[in-house]
Image (cartoon, rainbow, N blue to C red):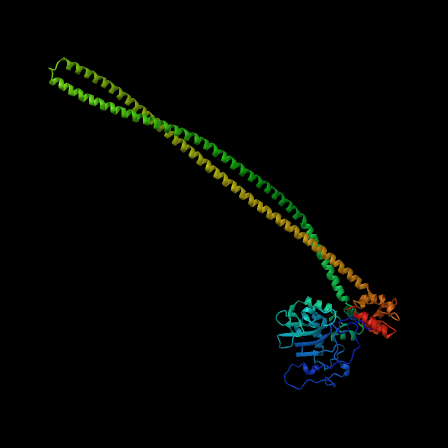
Length: 572
C-alpha cells in the first residue's frame, strides 16, 4: 500500500493500482497555436479507450486539465489528464516543460521554484503577447472537498499574468461560473487543503532541478540544497527565521507599548483630575446661579414693598387733594351766593336812598326804616367781608394744598425716577452678572470638554496600548505555538513521511486485532543509519523508493491490504 508525500494526483493518498492511461494529444502539433496545418497527431490507440480504460473516478486534488494561453511557446494549449499516470512526449523545444511550469505558476509558486534564472512570471509570457493565462482544473467531487458550495465537483484555478500590472488569481467552477478574484493566500490555502506542493522537487521535478541532481558531479552543496528543498527543511528554515523576526518585532512592539503606557496613564490621571475639578466647578456654578436667582428675587420683593408704600402715600395725598378741592368748591359757591346777596342788598339800598331823597318829606318812619335797612346793609357787608375773607383763606388753603400736592407729585416722580434708575442699574448689573456667569460657564464647559477630550484621548491611547500589548502577546503565543509545532514536526519521523501518518499508525494499532497478521510499517520508521554512515542516507532513501517507499507498509494477506486501504481512505 502506497502512502505518498506529495500532491494528490502525483504521489497522492492510497488509491487503486494505475491502469493504462488515456492517450494525450501530441503537444508538438497542438502548441503552435496556428489555425492551418495538419490535424493533431494521436497515439497508436487513436484516442479510443479500451475495456481496461473505463471511466475513472478522480480523487480530490487530482489535476484533470491544464489550459494555457500565450504561455512560453504555446499560443493555446489544452491538456486533459488521466486520473493516474500520464506520459507527455515530444521533440526538444516542443513545450513539454511548459506544462510543468504552468502547474507551478498557476498554483502560486514563485518563479524561482522552476530553477530558471528568473524572478518573475512575466518572462513566461509568449513573445509578442501582452498577457498570459493559466487555468488548472482540479477534481473536487470526492470526500473532504474544498468549498463545495462555491465550486462544486471541479475547482478551476486561473492565474493571469500581465506585462503591465500585477495580473491576479481567480477561482471558479468547472463550467466557468462563480468566477471570483482571490489573493495568492487563497490559492495557497487550496493547495494546502489538497496537500499539493508544486514547488517541492520530489513532487514536481523540473528540468533545472533534474540537471542539478543528475549532473551535479556529486557536489555536496547542490545535493544538500536539493535535500533541503525536497524535505521542506528549506521552507521550515525560512519560516523559522520569519518566526524569529516576528518574535523580535513583537518584543519591540511590546517594549514600545510598555514604554508608552506610563505616559498614557499619567495623561489619563491628569485628565481625570481635571475632569473631576471641572465637574465640581460646574456643580458650584449651578449652586451660584441658584443663589443669584434667590438674591435677585429678594431685591425685587423689597423694592415691591417700597413701591406699595409709596403708592399708598400717593393715594392718601390724592384723597386729601380731592377733599380740599371739594371744600374749596363749596366755599366758592357760598362766597358767590353771599356776593350775590350783597349785590342785591346794595341795589335795594340804592333804591331806598333814591326813594329817601325823592321823598324827604316822608317822615321819620321812613328815616328809621332807612336806618334799619342801612344797618342791615352794613351787617350784610360785614358778612360779605367775612365770607370774602373766608374765601380768601380757603383759596390760600387750596393753593397750599396744590403746592403740597405738587410737592408730593414731584417727590413721587423723583422717587419713581430714582427707583427706576436703581432698578435699571440693578437690572443691568444682574444682566452683567448673568452674562459673566454664562461666560464663566462657557469657559468651564470648554475646559470641561477639553479635559474630557484629553481624557478620552488618553483612554484611547491606553486602550490602543493595551490592544497592542494583547496583540503582541497573542502573536508571541502564536509564534511560540508555531515554533513548538515546527519542533514537533521536525522530530516526528512518521509525520515527515506524511502529515497523516501518525493518525494511520494509531488507526492500525486500534484495529490490530482485525488483521490476520499485523502490518509492518511504515518502513521508514525501521530504517536507521549507522553512526558515521550518514552521508549515505540520501542514497539509501533513493534505493528504498524515496518518501513513497519509506511510507509503505508490509502486509501478509490480501484481506489485510484491503483493511489497511480502508483505514487510509478513512483519514481523508
